[in-house]
Length: 505
Image (cartoon, rainbow, N blue to C red; front, side):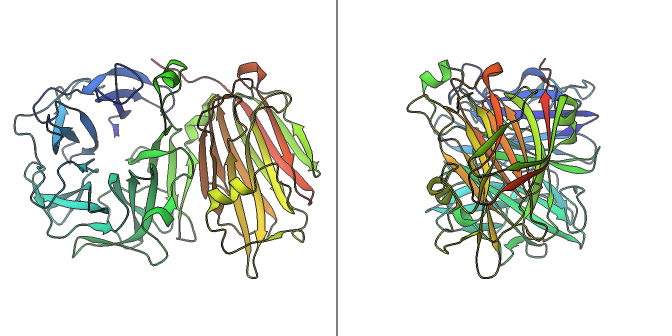
């Protein structure tokens, strides 16, 4: 949240180690979203209703300019309830201490609600004299977002019908609901209900460990959400990020009139040995999020404050990449860098035919990786690469054609990212909904030692990869532009910056 000139991030945190358990609300503050100061935890298990964990939730700023936290508490029987906490001292600019009033819990699971799958209350919004909040749940494999209403933020009543649900999607964690403008990149307050908006409903699918969203209409008279016809619930739907990215949350930043998205760069299979090596879940770079002009999807881009970490810049332009060639981008710290590149495709005549059965982008990337020669592509970047390319994470495009249009695939392929055996090295991918009339494709990649965050097509498709190189570390990391397609590719414009370290504490 943003409160009185300061950004606050609250996060699920185990103070005893980088493994699941002992969950508290970690708390850090910043004035610029980049440099952070860690404070003591805001909420720790201490009451009967949260003794087994203070799980996720949200903040809401009440009209009296008082922040309030809604969070899920888990009792000794695994029952999940929704509780609240308020600042102990509003005159403290950092809001270090939070208290749990004695009238908790506020929301208990009623009959018919799965009491062990009832969590993660959303930021509340105000409409027609009542607050509204969503709570994620699941019943018989149906994902559910329950709606609760309150006049005073204390006494809550469950709506007769779910706000939205979908079969065969499993538990809906961390629901997030907010409006987006049809005509502007500016963010909107969650209670804004003007005519020229769509609404976004995001849910984190516990079974998939990815974040999915739909665009649709909020039927305020019925208090229901209806996705657009082209917006699909569940595993076949749109994702914020097609890589390691989960349990995300947005908030409205009134200082800069923007909506900010932040997510967790998750790892699917931690072990104690992994933790000893320093491998753990971390936060992605905060992003702004807005509605694309086509009104079919969202777009994302790193917050502008990230640019303050840029150091030395290296530029490249009008550089040809013939089939089988790779060119090193020298003069930057390749293990910690920001690269923004536009590729030009002189001709699309050599584009491969797209098979309609290739609807699974991730599987397509796995079958047609960076080493598999094509017509137009694969071309892009080899990030966190060792000198002799024993290790690298390839971020690349491949272009196909149908009878009606071109199909653009963006991959972030970690299968060659590390010589370490037995670790998670997936190939991630998503299709990029772009018009190739100008024959250009843009890519921005943020490299931070073990994370590569990529934004294709100006932020239409985003992919985050968590990687663990053994050779391509620190000064031994390299960065290359490459092409393994028949068509020669032009690096029309490339800017690459060494990135300085953010300040922590």
